[in-house]
Every structure is written in structure tokens, then in C-alpha cells.
Length: 624
Image (tube, rainbow, N blue to C red):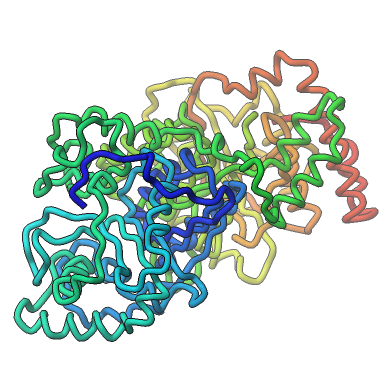
């Protein structure tokens, strides 16, 4: 209550394997990104099993479900509750808070969460833990056998809105005794209070916080104020420095200021460093077991462990084989995304993948391609923050809401990245490109017209976009095919290094063609194509440089796709330093030997799946 420093000696002990339940309301793209830092800080300090309960909209559920499934943290369970189904419970409350209707969802937790759940810690998304969350859970143990105090909440210092007790309470950190609230008919209690108070106030300014405080003012027996070091608020209206004598007393930091890291506080550098530590912390390091606490392994985890145990660690290609089954933590839609489906069913999404060293290509591609884009970025946690700063500082990227950025956290799993980007395509068709290529101006519209002209909806076609390259870093990009053909600095992609890759495109014919023409598959063919979004994914066994696109085109041919070259389409490869993987391919004999082994295994697999027709694939050699 009035305490300003922690007293560990009096802290009740939480059983070693007791599950701690945490409820979080999370909606939208930005909140789904911000909540990850909170989760990291909790996982870093925790020694107990955790069960997260997320009340979300459809966007946050998609993102967080994918994230936790791919994160595979032991002794962590996650449940989602559809916030859209709960809107009618609170939509009648006028609310001016920036969080909108989801800022009122904590009011319906007693009804939303499982009836068997008796207690839960409720957190805002902008919280950072500096201690084990079990210490906070232990506060529940102080109230065993008591029947009066039911809701625990940290005191706040906000300007008054609706009626409140003293300076009121902040709802960023709450401990709820759900069973007792249900006995008190909490649903009826808060509704009646809200109706009465809103007659005078007309609307809430602090969302659920106003209503919680109004209920508490009328029923002060319900609240037990937590010491304020459990919710050190860094906002303009708080006196956070009174909450602790020393920074070692801090338990929870609440960034509830619009200024966030720029907030004024004499210890702000300490707070900022703590926050940045978890913001950029490698989430893979949190995949650690809780020793001494047996937990039922996830079905996917068991399957993965069984698969990995069957691999031969003495196999020279062990790392390649292991990478094929490695589950990479994935954060879909890292930035805000907005796409409205077209009514003519011709829309096309550009699909590509990149790492940090190709970030500079994003603006150029966005200038060349107006349509939706699905990008998979292979980044570390720290690099993801660099990307975020880059994107938020770019006028070009900020002006585009139809670009989906999907982070695959860091061997280079090229085809996994492509598959992640492909799965998030929301259009009927997709253009499978590479980040180093700039599509011609107007290619997006040209491809959409080609969908109708070539009757793509009733046939299996792969539309080939001829690929060229330049060695000039400063290129006056050709505005038309005529300009392209006059460009002496341009040549067919890798023409002098690997002619087979694009030779079937028949560039000599393309120069004079005015209508689309068919070409036949040949060994090592690896064109860039537009296909239906239901097209098979890339084979994950090819994880570095070599054969990843070749294998995919081979699969399309086996499934009887027609390859049709577009006469007025082109793309240009921009120069860059050799990638890490191509350097390994050129310098490492074992790398090339393993690639050859994987290629032969892929061909044998094709033969088993497609029979006699696949015999023609047994003659090919590895390329890029």
C-alpha cells in the first residue's frame, strides 16, 4: 500500500510447478508487435509454467498464434478469445481513449475467461518486467481464506475523470480473483455503475480504467492496492520516482506515455536500457526447459524431436538436413497492413525474401510495383528493430499499407522464407520474384491484364517475366521494351555465368515477339514467374544457394503447368556484393557435395511421386 521498496523476506512462496495465468488484451498490428517485448521480459525471469490468455481481434490472433506456435517455448500455453464476439458487451459505452473498444475488454474478463479459472494477472501490452512474475502471483497467497478483498490493483496518478477513490487506480497491472468477482455479480455491478456515471460524464477518457475506478469508489472493500513498484508508470501525470528508493526495487515498468522512450525521468536511461534489452533480446534463447517441472510436450514439438533424433549426426550433410526441419520463430505482419481484394479476381502479389543487407531495395521495388507485396525478412531480433526504424523513417514505405512484412528470425533458409511470404498472399495470383530485381514500371497492371487475356483462371499456366541484369549501380531504368533493347549495358540474367538458367526463355525470340509464346521446360530452368497463389510451395531441403528455384520450376512442370513468356514484360537484376551463401557454394567443396546429394534425393522423390514422366528430371545438374 504505502510501501516503496520490496520486502523479499515476507513474500509468500509460489509452488515450483504452479502455473501462472496471465491475461492480455491485444488488438491490431502495432500492439501485436509491442506485446512481444512484454512476453520476452516475463519469459526471461520466469521459473514457473505460464498460461497466457489473449483477448484479440482477428489480426492479433493470426499474428500471435503463428508466433507462439513457431516459438515453441516449453511450459507455455496460449489461448485466444475472440474480441469481436465480445464487442457487443461494451460497445454501448462512449469512449474517447485511443485504444478504442478494446480498451474496455478487461471489464468482461470474468465472463470471457474459463469459469474454472479462479485467478489471473492482467497486464497492458506496454509493460516490462524486471523480476520474476511469480513474485506478483505470490500476492494472491496473502488472501487465502479471505472473502472481502477481491481485486488487486496498483495505485495511479492520472487526472480524474469519472468518480474515483483518491487519485484512482491504473489498470495496467491487475490481479483479479475471478471466482469472487463472479460471486459478487461483477457483470451486473460494473454495468449499473457505468450507466449511472456516464449520465453525467457522457464518455470515458481512460477506457476501462474509468469504470473500474467508479466501481471501487462505491465498493472500496473490493480493492487491495499493490505497492507502486509493481507498476512504475512513466507518464506525464505520475510521480514514479516516489515508487522506489533504488532501481533494484523496481518490479514492473509501465510505458504508458505517448512519449515512450523519450519520457522525462532522472532514471530514464536505466528504464530505456532495460526495455531495449528485451526489445532486441534473441527470443530463441528463451526456448529453455523448466527443469524439475514435467510438462506435456506439444504435439508438434514431439514430432520435431522424433524427426531430429532419426537424423545421423555423423552425416556430412547433417546441418542441411537438420535445417529442413528447424522451426524458425516467425512474426507475420510486423507492420500495419491493409489490403482490399479486387472485384475482378485478377490481382497479383509480388513475393520476395531478403536479409538486412538488401534492405535498401525496398523503396525501389515499391516505386516500381504498385500492387500488394508479401516480403519475408530473415533478421535477428536486433535487426528487426533496425528494420522498424528504417521503415518508420521512410516516406515511400510509410505511404504503402499493402506491403506485408513477415519476420523470420535467424545457415539461411531461403525456401522457408519464400514459403512464409507465399502463405500470406491474399490475392488470386502471385509473382515470384527476388529482392535484387526491379520489375519494369507498369508490370503489376500488365500482369493483371494478362490474367484475363490468357484465361489464367481456367488453366495451369506460369507466366514468365524475362530477367535481365546490369553491372551499373546507377542505371537509367528503361521505360519500355524498346529502351531495354537499346541498353548496351543489359544482358539476359547470368547469361555469361549460367546460360541454362534462363536459356529456355529464348531471348532472341522475345526481342521480336508481340504476342505471348510457349516454351518447354529444360534442365536447370529457373525463370521468374507469375502463378496462381495455390501453386505448390518451395522444397525446404534446399536451404542455401543452389537449386531452390530450379526445384520449384521442376515441380511446376511435373504438375503440367504451361510456361508462357510475356512479350512486353521484363525485370532487371541490380548489382550487389556476393551473398554469404554463394560464397560458401564457390569455396566449400563439402557444401557443393551436399547440394548434389540433396538434388539427387529430390529427383528420386519426384520419380516416386510422378512416375515415368519424371525420368527426364534425372539428368539435371545443380545450379542456383
